Length: 300
Image (cartoon, rainbow, N blue to C red; front, side, top):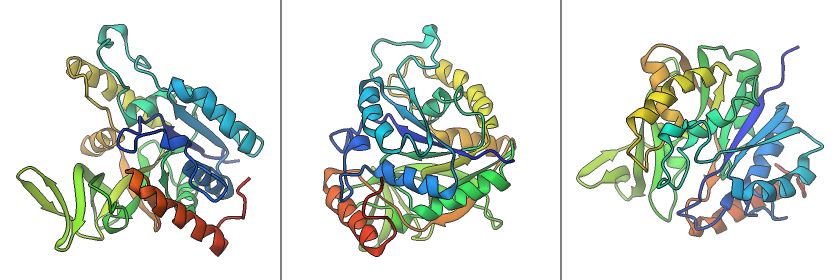
């Protein structure tokens, strides 16, 4: 029997632009966090386990909040991403004040995940279809050299309250990822959608797929990532703000012809909280989904 896939939730972010711990902030009609909708959708899509990556400071609060809600409905595990996680002492710098990003978080979970798994952000709402597509891929198609991502059209993943960072993707005609560029200052104006950073101005077509950090991986990705991790630490030992992102790993796998990444079509609905002003939009969107019957009156 095929083992059920696992969902890895990245909830260790600092929430610097939002101004608080949005991972454990309530947005739903009953103060549900965004990640609770992801867990609900994962359970009904056939996932068998949820692993949370959290900071040590919010570990106990996260356990107290989530274990009573869905601990009896799906297997749970919690993993801490700390400054020294997977970092040899020679590379530890007391002046650094936060961990190394999403691929570092992924590595922190390698001892508790041994089956195909999805990776998502805690503070993004991805929609039920994304989880159904991921579950199908992770039980039927995934291989050591074939991973996936859920693609979202750039026009659907912007904020009205400031610029956003997105992994802008280039796709093959067959629907595989050729590579992605992290664009950090994307916004929409009357002329279209642009990345503008200093003198650089790049137009992005409305339907262009972007990565919202919604991935599906074979567990072979842990070894593949670790091979890049230690050279990254060596190259960045003097850089206190260096970050080791999942797109860096994925781009490397594609460029080195070590793996292909299929772009799934499940990215039909998305919303998230980048700025405090996004909060009302998210609350109204969740309320509407409940009223339409997409979710029960109470999730748990």
